Amino acid sequence: MGYFIDVAFDSLNKFGEELCGDNVEIIQTEKEVIVVLADGLGSGVKANILATLTSKIAGTMLKEGASLDETVDTIVHTLPVCNIRKLAYSTFTIVKIDYEGQVHIIEYDNPPFFIHPHGTKIEIKKQSTPIQDKVIKESHFKIQDGDLLTIVSDGVIHAGVGALLNLGWQWDNVNDYLASIAPKEKCSSHIARGLIETCKNLYMERPGDDTTVVAIKVREAEVVDLFTGPPEDPEDDSWVIRKFMKGKGKKVICGGTAAKIASRELERELEVDITYLDKEVPPIAYLEGIDLVTEGVLTLSKTIEKIQKYVEGDFFEACPSFLEGKDGASLLARLLIEDCTHLHLWVGKAVNPAHQNPDFPIDLSIKLKVVKELVNWMEKIGKKVIVTYI
Image (tube, rainbow, N blue to C red; front, side, top):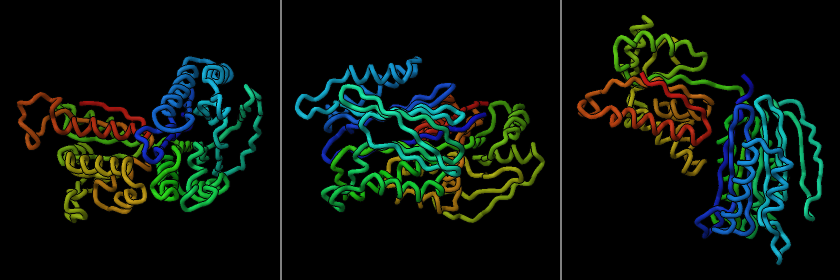
């Protein structure tokens, strides 16, 4: 298995606008990850349409096998140039990175990308090609485990203009900020969210331009197996525990019945911690060979709430809610966000009468609805999810 390409992005709309004039397209194939960041001229609806058109053209062509040269040529000759300002209607950055770490980048009038290696310094050589009075910059290099590649729209390097900073944050200042956090954060969503919130603060929460950050972190795959709910047929108990324990990653069990099944099949004692670290979250338990044992539906629901707050809320306020918490939901949220690239859910389809009327169809069960919601939020933060129903 090659590297896992951990990609996350976040954006701010220009103050007063309902739509963002930047657009990000992320396409994953069997061989590589393609990321397109387009910045439409101006702001609002017009800029959003132009940026979306640019990113969709690039993403679709590259996915279908077109070369970068063909893609760039199509975009440049498809999008017109503003007659008044003599500017392209959309600028863009395209990144292609395969699972062995080979990177190919095309830049068209966006701020230069940022690269922060975890170890050996990376030599970057950019080749310039003039197209329609503009210069396309092209780069080839290789990155390794722990390296960080970041691309931004110009709203990032202009953050603070007219507010806290006269000339904006500037590229070198952003570079210094990223250099300080790159060694500490292995999760790309932390980096993207943190940089966006910093820009928001510099703009004093009134962004003067659409602002987008795409963080790409190369990391080794980290698998989490999560078992919740008893199998529909009790005879499958032994099978699912054998399969569950074969995984090489971290092991999580959510649910009292599931924990008892594992305890019985593994012939290991289950110890419940009766300490309530959060009055809204049931206590955790301990089982040899399992990294985390929690209650089921309630804890999973609280975990989803924390992940949602992390995605949608203020980054610097949301992080402490799970980074520092010791209750089951906080521990699980931190594990899924920071220490997981691939999540394999083992979901028993037995209906719990404590949750609902057992005469209801199985697809209405609270447990399965919670699982589907968890899958949705995990995919939103760039995780690979597999669900096995038993």
